[in-house]
Structure formats: structure tokens, C-alpha cells
Length: 211
Length: 166
Image (tube, rainbow over all chains, first blue to last red; front, side, top):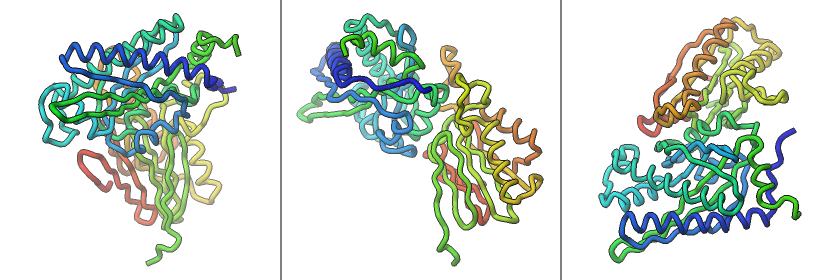
């Protein structure tokens, strides 16, 4: 019997609210770090089947930048922050203040660590917002970043959970800022893949008894 | 050209599929997973598995998806070949994948899975006396592989190096 992953729309609303609060905190940290105005939003939170994750980021062969984190604590799992290659490039250029005029596969160490730091800030902010809402405590590992085929990156992170868990939580994340007179909008996807039992823990903490 | 019956069959994560010439078998975005092609050249029959983990004994529950694991996927593919009238000793293999996509860190034991997959696939093929004719394994790159049953060529595509034929 596979674990149910049906979160009630009401529970997804709470997670989206937590996501928006987390994103706002992350944006504040980033704004301070870079001394520029940055806004972040979570327009959408939903669940998807694990097999559908790669399609959401353009397909198994699409080149993406993905930060991978292992989540420990009350509701353990894996977390990814995924950007399309052009957006990752723009973001790294923005964060490091350097322009990247070479292929993304050759991104330098500064670019890589800037995206890792972004993932670190974002994951920390999301997880602490969820903790504020639910008293579920979770802690991310330091992020690992890789740039390659989406299928290759995602499948490595979820290999052990595939089938024992069948669904992931997707947190759409949009970052808005300006560079000179230019508006920059970057959309990334955060995936949370729960270990067995984690969805049940989250459901319960979000008020299973009320339904 | 006898291309009228040619089809391109795509194999997803934790699946295996079979076909005959002149069709092709493809799986996209192999990372730590391994693509195992078994083929029999006289009857032009081939099967491709996209395995994710080394050993079915790692499964947490009993109702396992057999095509997810190296050992059970290979067993099922061999059964198919024998059922379709092939001699086991004529089956050959080509394998690709088993990369490590995220750089090593002591806190991520999870990430050695690619190397473990390769060892397991080679061991299970050896156990069944199936020779590995070509391999493109390890490294830190994603691979898309396409097996042409007619020629027994395995095309391996990476974002860094383009396409190679093994």
C-alpha cells in the first residue's frame, strides 16, 4: 500500500502562505546582502508525481541548474531548487555582479557558490516559515549545485525514495528585482520530496483533524 | 530503405521495454541510474532497462517495482529473451550511466549511488554470463542513450561532449 499524498486544498493554501512568508524573509536577507531591492513570491504550491518532476522543468534532457539539499528533522526528505539555464546564468550574473559570456556548463566557482548560497537562504527561509506554522522542525544540508540534464540531476537525488514515496511538493518561486533600469524576473522551482511518513506528519501538523 | 516499421521507443525511469529491428530504444537523462541494453543479434531483438538502484533487497516494502533494480530488471529481461526463442548464451549487453552528478561531500552518502549501480549491474551480468560489449559509465555527466537494434549501435549523448557511438 503506497502512502497517500493527497493534501487537502486548504492544507496546500497553508503551505503556500508559509511559502510566501519564507520567500519574503529570503528576499529581505538577499536585499541586505546585495544592498538592492529584491522581491520574492510563491504564486503556486501543489503536489506532483515523482515521474512528472522532470517534465515540469522542461523534460529529462533539458539543461538546468539544480541545487540539492538533504532535509533532516521531523519531516525528512530531499529538496531541489531548479532554474532553467538562461535564468541561472542571469541570476548568477546578478548575484556576483559579473556577466557570464560563456556557456553555462562552464560556470565558474563564484557563480556556482552564489547559486548555492541562494538555495541555502531560500531553503532555510521556507523551512523556518513552515516551522512557525506547524512546529515541524527541519534543517537543510549545505546545498550541492550541478548543471546538467534535468532527469540526470533529479533522479540521482530521489533514487532511494522513488516508489517508497510517490509524490513531491512543488513550490513555484519568483524573484523580482532591477539591475540599472532593467527589470529582472527569475522563476525557479523548489521541489520537496518527502521520505515515507513525511507527508503524513505534515498533514497532521496542518490540521488533519479539522477535515 | 526499410524504415516503415521503425519506431523510437522511449523507456522511463524504473522501466524496461523491448523491441525488434528496425526500431530503436531510448532513455533520456541518465544520471546515477544505469541504462542496460541486452540484445541478440541473430533475431535482432533488444531490451533496455533504466535502473535506479543496485539491489532489490534494498526495497523497503515487499511489493517492489522489479524494473527499478539492477538484479530484478536483468532477470526479467532474460526471461523475455528466452520466451521469445533466443538462446541465453547469445545475449550481449551494452551499458551506460552510473554518473555522480553532485560533487562528493561526506554528508551525502546518497551520492555514491552511481558507482554502486555500475558494480551491481556488472556483477549481475557476469552472474548470468552475459558479456558486456561496450560501456560508457561513471564521470559527472548526464547521458541520453539510444540503441539501434539493426546495427547494435548505442548512441550516447551528453551536453558537454555531444554524441558518441559505442
